Structures are given as C-alpha cells and as structure tokens.
Length: 446
Image (cartoon, rainbow, N blue to C red):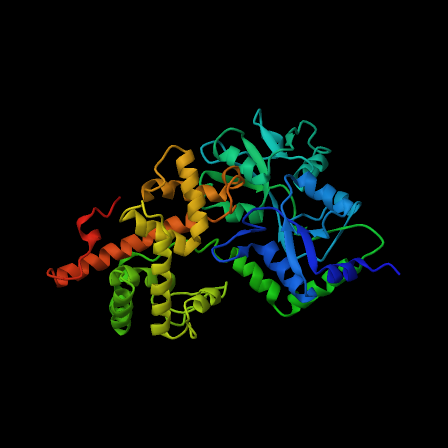
C-alpha cells in the first residue's frame, strides 16, 4: 500500500516548505531564522518530529507552480486566500487578516480613489492577490489600468514608489506595517479590499493527510495561545520603536544603577571593557530591569537568549550578576570577531551592531558599503548600509539575506548617547578618573 504524504514526510524526516524572504515571512535573525511563517512552520515540523527545510523560489509564480507540481509539501509565504486560488489549491486554516492597500509617495498628492489615479503608474506583482483584486475592480472601474511585473516582489515595488520611480503599488497591510521604519516616504492612500485571510497553501489532490494534520495543528496553537504569541513576536515592535528620552534615562540611572554598578565594574574589568559602555548596553537592553522579558524569550538585565546564556555558561538569566557577566563576556567575544584592521571607536560601534543583529548581517552590510563606494571599516558609512538589508534589491544578493537593519542603527546610536551621558557625568564627578579610555579623546559624533 502506498504511504500517504504525511507518512512519507515522517519516513523521510523532512518537511519541505516554500516561503519568501521578507520581514513578514522568513529571514535570518541574530541567532537563528525568524519570521512568522518560519516560526509556525518550525513548530509544525517539530510536532511531526522532522526537520524543516524552507526554500525561497525566485518569484511568486514559481511558488504557485511549485506547490501545484508538488515540489514542496506546501507554501507558507503570507499568501492571501482568494476565490481564484481556491480553484487550484487547498488552503489551511487562516492565521491572520490583512487588507490590501494602495501606496503612494508622501511628496505627491494623495489619490482619492482608484478611478482618480490620473496618468500615474500603478504596478503590482503578476499573478498576485493584488492583481486578482484589480481584475475584479475593473468590472466597475472601466478605465482602471496597471502594469503586472514578473521579476519583482511587492517589497521591490514599494521601494520603487519610495524612490519615485513609479507612482503607486499595492501591498498587504502587514507588510506595510513592518516596512514603516525604512520606507519613510511611503503613505497609505486607502484600502482596496475588505479584510482578507492569510493561510498556508497545499496542493489540491486526493491525498489530504498532511493538510488534515495542519488543520489539527492550527486548532491546537489557536486554542493554547501559541499563535497569538507568535504574531506578537513578529509584529509587537511595529508601534513601539521610540526610545526613552534623556530625562527618563537620568532618572532610571539614578534609581537603578547603584544596586548594579559594582557588578558592571567587576565584569567590565574582567573582560577589558569600559564599565560605562556596559551600563549603556544594559540600559538599552532592559532599562536595567533584571526581570525584563521580551516576546521572543530573551530575559534578564542584559536580555540574553537561551542559546547565548548556554554559550556563556550562564545558568540563571534572571540573576543580575550572572546576566551582567554573560552580557560582558558575549560582547567581549563579539568585539574580538571584528576584523583587526578596524580601529576604535568604529570597532566598538560595529561590535554593538553585531551584538544586536548578528555578526554575519553586519558583515553583509560591510560588503554592501564597499559596493556603494564607501568605507566598510567606518561606522558612519556602514550604518547607512545596514537598513538596506531590509530591502530585497540589496539583501537578495547577500549571504545571510534579510535583516531588520534599521534596528541595530538605532540600537547603536542610543547606546552611544547613553554612554556619552554616563561618561560626562562620571568625569564631572571625578575628573581624575583612572579608567578614562581611548573614547575620551575621540569625538562622539563620528
């Protein structure tokens, strides 16, 4: 008797899934792959007791055709459920709702409706749910026109609108939300659809054993709250990207640092670091809260991941001294990875970026910096390239792919600000401070 698809997956020990490299689906995080689709697919593979292999086809058309041909077991790629697609594919349970939105450049007049786009150029991905929607709307807007493109993704078209190369495109609201930090000139004109559902896409054949297993899986993660936690992990940062001001920082330092200052001094000395820089790092991570916890599971005063804690020999992340020791040790280790030709203070700024986003993403950004004719050994140049890791036209040619590259830039610049304040306050208190280091004779606005 021929084994079912589900049985073959378990026999082979591998679940093969099509996805897209984007902030809403799948990308390489600092310690491991990340993204909502990855998180859901990885947990599903774990429950099946098999390894997960995620494949990123070149285009949306390749994903659709590959699922139909059975090249992958299914697609987890932020795909919208549409009537046309349901004729050819089987969709799993919906896990998220989005709306389709018309985007335009902030410096241009806001369009009032699809019937009043004038001579503006509207481009969408060919075969996408966005094009399906336009085809439907053309029944009531006779002069509606657009250009379907086959060699670009929605993120690429968003970039073209931001660069004022085209006038309009359409994107899903979840993608728009995640893109706000680096497409600062993009604006939403209006929704062109009612709420639409996202779901995994399976082949439409007689053997639905894997599909039925996925249905049970989504029922489980919906009931136990895991689906809600994964969505929060992916999107919880979207409306919370502002950082505390100087006044709040000084108040927190006055109230919280005294209990931990001896520990920061102790482990900064042990790992040959400036203790004030270590404090600034700890404040950026947790506001010096030893009980801090993020939606992604990092915990403690230095917000260490389980993986990092294990590597650093830390058994209790919630113990302030252990956390500070682990953070100091890990930052010192990261600092040593920075290429020897990079001098201070750039060496430290790049190490901080690597501490946040991962060493190899920083290396990708340095390669991009060099390609742009800038200096890959200078933070002032590399920090202009890091955000490009969030744009497909740049990250598609890198070794480690997508990263939320604006985050390490803000991360480093915040730490530099906190460090400057701590330094100035410390030196004002004790101008003969024997711990003055190289940074004290360098400008802080490099």
